[in-house]
Length: 367
Image (cartoon, rainbow, N blue to C red; front, side, top):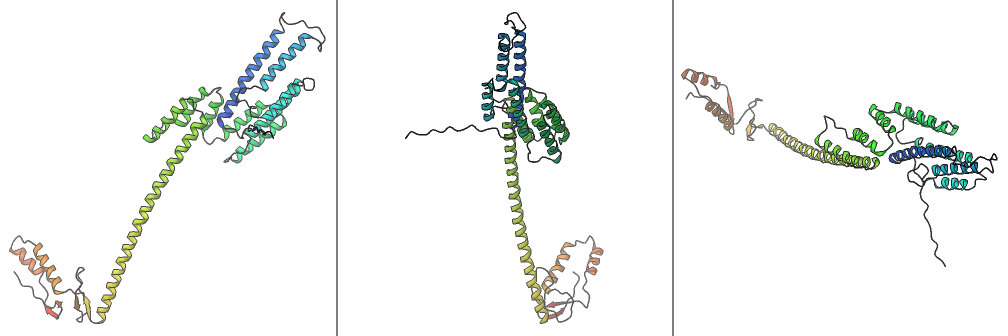
């Protein structure tokens, strides 16, 4: 049994068309149309000269008329079915096959029928491209796309439809910079003319740019200058921006985790301190119940008898230590000041200091 071979059918266009592909098709359409017009003009000019065959009067049998018709049809065949890449019909394989068959059957299809078929296909192509819904389309954008699609179906001249579409596009632009960008591109006819426009729009220097942003713009300016396609450069820019944002998000997440850990440690320390304070309060309550208390000095934890009253008291050691510290810090300038110091710190006769054995009178002596 012979092996069966399969041939993969080329895929058709994906709508809406990529930016570069749409521009290339527009450039080639204008270029091919100029060639067609020059070719037709050259043909008609030739048949006005004496070098052309004489007209015999019978159109069907006239060699002059037959030759003119044949050359005009060939010019349109090259216009409609060019083998050059990036034509609007290059990937419309069924259409190309159908139109090829029409050219090969001159008795069945005249040039008018071929024109009609090509016009119908071009309108369908434009509808699927510029009138296709895109993510992010506003109600205004959707509205003028629907209008353009309807006008193409109704047979309105294509240049008028495209002109109105472009004006509506300008009006719906979110910024004047974007509108100017589209307007400048629409006036170009080649990739070389668009390079400085791309650089001004995507890579223009701003006074607030950081060094990283300046390097970023310089990098992609060079890519545009090297003739790398617009879609390729913009895709690389978006990818780098996305990666940079991911790094920033990761860094912010790390810092947030560190803050959470620090907050957790702070809360644990706070809870531990609260627990310690609670235990101390409970201990004080227990001591009060049995007539005891803890020295009021923060760093002392000695138990003292509180049976003499509710006043805040200190143990003897803490009281005398604090009193001695006050005396050491004071340096009298003369005897008079020293006397005032002693009078100031003289202990009242009714002041008592609690010791572990009970109360003792405290008497401060001069000197």
